[in-house]
Image 1 (cartoon, rainbow, N blue to C red):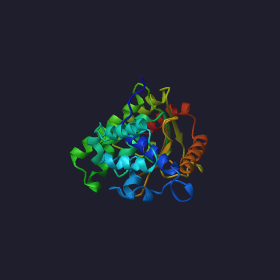
Image 2 (cartoon, helix red, strand yellow; image 1 turned 90 degrees about the vertical axis):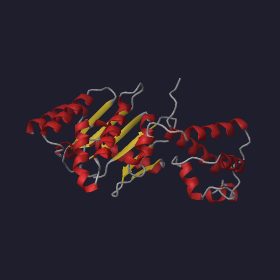
Image 3 (cartoon, rainbow, N blue to C red; image 1 turned 120 degrees about the horizontal axis):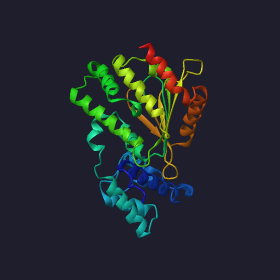
Image 4 (tube, helix red, strand yellow; image 1 turned 45 degrees about the horizontal axis):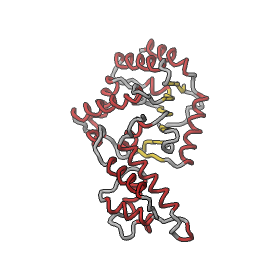
Length: 293
């Protein structure tokens, strides 16, 4: 039996189905479906709310609006209607992520909620060790550096580190996510927390690089070291469309499932994979850096 999806994935599935129904209902101008503005006419939700529902960021607070929307879309099959109503109901329940939502920047909860659903992840981090690879002491040291600037409380830091450690469970769950990471050389050379913290972090990277479902490459300083923004691509197989996540300069997180955007970042990742050192060279690389501490 397949594991039950998390709340974030359920909201995303609901949104995808509703968007497909809206675009395919054939009742709009020239038979090309309904616009969101047309769809919400007579309902108690706004066009912006429907957009958030379709992108998995929100669900219906009033089931009556969902039923009216499905009627507009020409859905008459009671099994389909009840399936979507139940999906909306289930996705409204609290899950493990609820207690951590206030710790994350805008857009991040949706990404974190989807990590356990992914079949594979491709990640590029140029300046810091990626979160799923971090040791607890490394993560703590990073937050401590930012504390006086961001005015973090000790409780906030403790909970944030706890969340980061919990996210790493996707690598050890029953069907672990296949993780492919490219780390910029700067991510390994930037001193975080002192030599002891870095030695422990290097040891963790060496350990993870031996796991069958984890691949870690280092992109050395060279002409191909050209991308300064980090990003992650989540692939869900045939269950959901792949998504790409990037961080903005203001700390918010942007995600997109538009094929054009996903493919653009996938091509960028493939190009850097070819330029990076092969995965089997990673242990030797971090050992050399450790000797320099």
